[in-house]
Length: 202
Image (tube, rainbow, N blue to C red; front, side, top):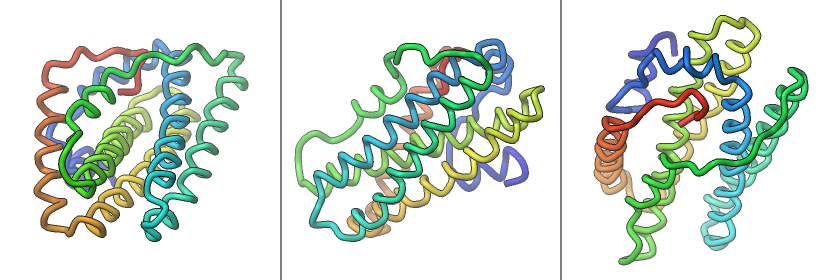
């Protein structure tokens, strides 16, 4: 991924993050790192929840098990960065972005449809995180932090493709991709009315 267009074409996101968000984030690094830490923690617990709810889906269990370890490792890396900078982990805040996505998930109907929405929710969160990390990896003045977020960007891209692949595996590619387009349109509508904050990753 060499430029913003590459990221958008790979991730399929319909609405790019305003580049000015990076300037806000740079002014609130302690808050961004805190929010980032909790995002990694929640990503790990989401994978655990999917495994616990679907123990009979062998591919899902096998593919997500190492992601749990990786996401928790990311949580520890962000904690170490906070400590290196003499900053502290603040309190977890309400994640309005994720809550909006969860509200779009189907709550009734077939089990397969509900699972597909959970997988696509995770895919979208990873995709948007990847895009935000790319912004940070290119826009921050601190060269160390640019590289720090470059590594996270690459990891999130892999997780995004994994969740899409799992949705394809269990629901069929054509069906999953139709629903994915609905998710992308919904997320773009949500963010079109969003107020960017420098103390939030999403």
